[in-house]
Image 1: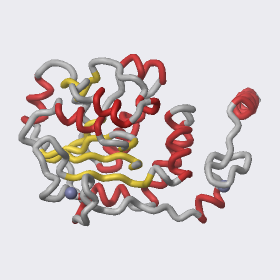
Image 2 (image 1 turned 90 degrees about the horizontal axis):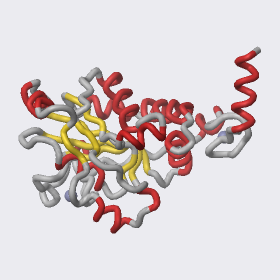
Image 3 (image 1 turned 30 degrees about the vertical axis):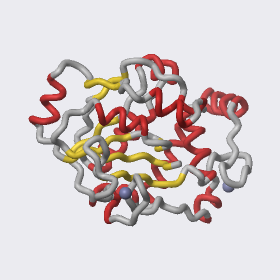
Image 4 (image 1 turned 60 degrees about the vertical axis):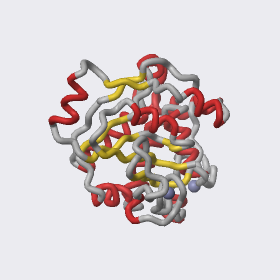
Length: 238
Ligand SMILES: [Zn+2]
Ligand SMILES: [Zn+2]
């Protein structure tokens, strides 16, 4: 009884509408889920879009400070994907993350990542204060899910030094400027840097939720030791 009441109250305060057809009830109704064809992000160089095997960065775009491959599941322009991400991130709706995980599995994204042969996973964390405000860190949750699915070690190697202004409110050029000096450092003592090397994590996958300009992921990359190969993954790409 109590749980039914609680659920009723929660539903009254946070009514759910399907992200696609807006029908009252579920966040992504069964009909829409079965009908909607989601376009996977084209496998290409993440920087120039040149066709490339396994999302590898092309020769022209390759620089020491860039990822060797950049992977995304879906386009942020897809309304269902965008609204599910928003419900998860800003309305703290766990069922939205559940739907996103289901979609990534259904559309074969997990298999693609498995075939890419990564050795470890590192989330790009929120600042501690922001995580406490929000109650969770979406990149960490996503990284944890992928580490389980791919049976890979999850390494909390990064820490955010200072709280950056909410990026959703910023223009692209401001966003880039803010990231110029990296807000990320290696977490814990200097030994984490050592352990990334000594544990032999040769191909590392960095995780964030959305790729807008890629500046957050590149700032995170700056803080990590040289000599390993780094790739990036986000659920969506703008
Ligand atoms: Zn629907
Ligand atoms: Zn390129």
